[in-house]
Length: 102
Image (tube, rainbow, N blue to C red):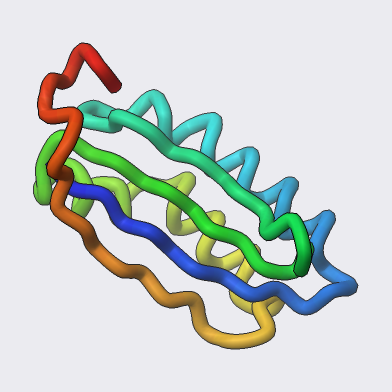
């Protein structure tokens, strides 16, 4: 299992647009084979900062996500909304290890 935490800072005037694009991507991403979670989190103190929490059963499933039409549409739609390039950090899941607990 693999989790990627994607850190994004958006230009303040585009926060609402970014959120709408992320919701569209989320709604399709959670339908993908191997997807365990796809969360969109907004910083409580600095609303232009976001964390996208993406959990997949395998590295292969995670890589397949980046080839989907909804991801590619999201990437194109949000590119100009970002204050700086996004940063994705991969993590190994330590606990829980049981799929049914996700």
